[in-house]
Length: 349
Ligand SMILES: C[S@@+](CC[C@H](N)C(=O)[O-])C[C@H]1O[C@@H](n2cnc3c(N)ncnc32)[C@H](O)[C@@H]1O
Image (tube, rainbow, N blue to C red):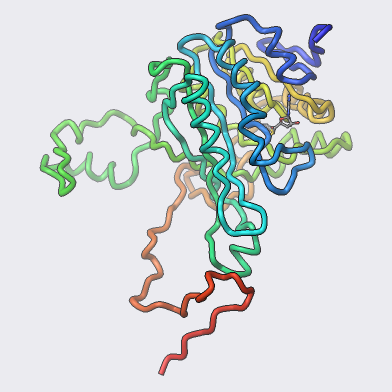
């Protein structure tokens, strides 16, 4: 690139650049970034308005960016990639692209997979309709993979930063006591299990609905006639990783920043940050995140989210057997759903 990337906006802790992430990365110093937290354009079959790369070419496309991430990350830094799945065009089977991606990152570029996370959005609608609601041969796709990688097997991290409240069952156990014993699985649950540590260690399933409906960002885009970014992640997702993997003053980068959710969270958590985005209109919308009068309350952010219980803390996950009644409802389609015919109802004699 012949000239400096265009600085679009500056805040107390961060900067937004309107440019191609590859051009921006080329200007970055070696080992200068603590966390790359991003949601790249997914290799979706149906293209989104900002032009996704096809699943097959995705890994090659991503490699150029990933080499730069490796170069600019500090040795104990982390790369966190939120990536949705995709269907093979015209058939009810899944693309392997996000798995091919993580294998390439580890095998070819030398990243270590610190842990795989799954972001479950309880509010996801059933799709694709043809397989899920019409032929009824697949279930709702409601999780994104979130790959946490690092140049080292020992990235800077602490799960104490992201502890979860104890479940009702665990609270009962802490109150009523627990008899140490060997579980059928062979796990020896000792007396330490009943020590109250104040909070639980969270699992790698992160439940966050994507139901933002009346935030300052949305209202501001509407008022200014700007397109709302169509694929935002909820602020809690980058917040989880920024808290777990960085300290105040560390540098967080989102090279595919969209509406700059990562920047908004990093600013609030007093991390230094850089957001980079190709589409200027998304950045014009993103400015609202840094100009709003005060922090939005959880109640505003989650308005309309019926998945949360009254205390706003837990989501209920149904037990798979909740509706099983000992019989099969209807015969399975012989052809695996190939024809659009609906399965016949079983005649009960
Ligand atoms: C999935 S979106 C990110 C959304 C963001 N996490 C948010 O919550 O608003 C991916 C973004 O990457 C941008 N993008 C695609 N290729 C890019 C590139 N080469 N450099 C910078 N941004 C790019 C797209 O315009 C899109 O806004």
